[in-house]
Length: 310
Ligand SMILES: C[S@@+](CC[C@H](N)C(=O)[O-])C[C@H]1O[C@@H](n2cnc3c(N)ncnc32)[C@H](O)[C@@H]1O
Image (cartoon, rainbow, N blue to C red):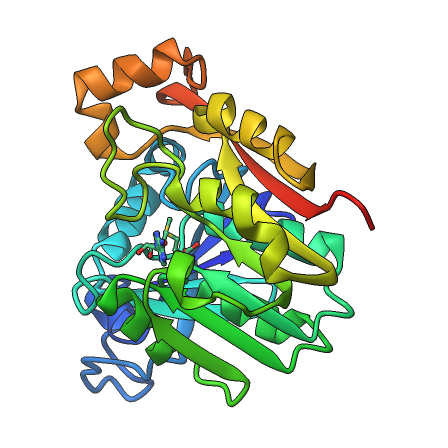
């Protein structure tokens, strides 16, 4: 299954490919009438399109499609491999091969869109903290014309291995370690990250979404990781604004919001945990409004941090 997004993320187009053409779309005969069990993977057919997807898998909008299209898209979403394509960058992610690794999601694409719109010239060296599938690094390698050295770091071994498998480029090194210790003494023109950002009392920051440790590290030590004109581009959320904004204010960095997009809160571990959700609502980072098939919303922000004194 291929999900291809337009450059402004206003449309998501779904395609079937390879074995799905015979298995789901019914294209199981060649021109002579012979059985075709599986077409080559690079053969694809358009299936459906949704406008303004709020998530990578926007179940509500998919549910509004005509019944046959709807069911075909849901069937394709069960395919073992999902290819995500945005601005010419393509990544085939196989969740069962990479258990526990965070695949491309809406934050990933919002980050890439903001990076591309902001412009990526004069970046010779870059690092991605928490590289997961490697999509953001692939995007930089494709779109930053001066990039000669790209470092990817993830402390989760399977995620580092997944990054390595997806980003095969002589300019890259992949490190399996905690970004807060592995990069001491190194400076980069660009530090990019889509870090965990969901605060929780007594959080244990050992996964892809819980806690704000990496954001706190970035605000306290980020300027030591930057060259003179370097910048950090990070995802944050209204969920952690009450923590992140004071941390920036007391740091040696200044923040500029590159984009802010309201999306449904869809991390099920949070939605199904009443006390965690209550805490987030009390901290005012969640908007409760039944709309477009979702009831809890937060704002995903792409923020640029640069040296306060330049
Ligand atoms: C939300 S996922 C983002 C994955 C990928 N960059 C993307 O946008 O699709 C966060 C990633 O950060 C990693 N991570 C969290 N804290 C880390 C740390 N201190 N050092 C290195 N990696 C970390 C997690 O293992 C996870 O892969």
